[in-house]
Image (cartoon, rainbow, N blue to C red; front, side):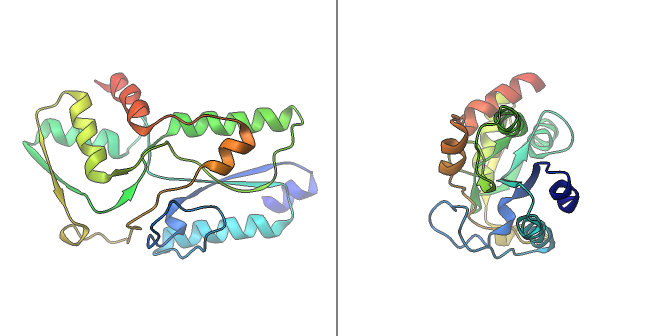
Length: 202
């Protein structure tokens, strides 16, 4: 696809993930930080980024994190469903990142397209986008239950107490300074976007 975009002088926008990082950082990741994915998903996304950047086409990589939406299957809808079925939920509290509403990512992609269509100069390369703020999966789940008005106790647990087939980075905050400067956008806080989404579901 990147080769064809180069041939036809077309822009290429690729959506990537915070899973390209290993999660050992202590400050929000910037675009130039070393990638070291922990699993196959992160590895394939990282290889996709590299292939695009090496293709020579006008490529834009948007790394994002913890995507959710009022559509499809995702953490938001799963927590609402489980919270209505159970008295309590155990949710991981030692993985830190930022929940991102798909609508907000979509608006940013459309803004990038609009500016490129208007012939505005947006440098090619890698950009980070997520909502603002910091959360653990426990914080995210607790906020969902609270905003939905569901009577369900949310208990924090550690990653080691909930083993999964794929490893996730313990810390995956993304620094959004580059995308905000390039597109001149403001990014909503994750709780504000979550409130909007929950309102549509309950």
